[in-house]
Amino acid sequence: MAGSTFYYQGYFESKMKSDDLQSMSLDELWTLYEAVVAQLSQKAAAELAGLDRRLRQLGTVPGNPKRPYPKVPAKYRNPNDHNETWTGRGKQPRWLRDQIRSGKQLTDFLIR
Image (cartoon, rainbow, N blue to C red; front, side):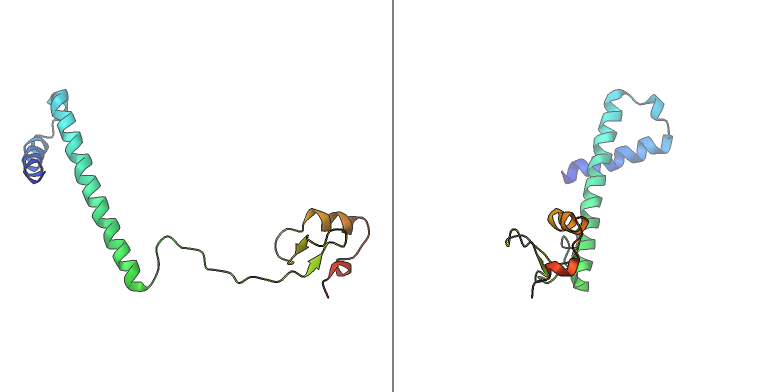
């Protein structure tokens, strides 16, 4: 591959000096395209490796952007089904929303 890279570099230099892509044959354009894709892939991989190395030096773990949240105990319980609970965070569960609409208070469902 190293020999072909050297060939491509010489090929680029000779073709890019003329700046005449219109005069290139289909085979020449395809060879140029493959060489550009190979160079871009190598440079992108090297850049990604460098960024990962910098992140590790900073103590940041790539791939885990969310911080862990502690478990929160349930604060409210459905009196009709004791398995259904709610911590008070996020969207109200349907069972609680329906009970509140029927006239009950949120405090009626507190776990003591």
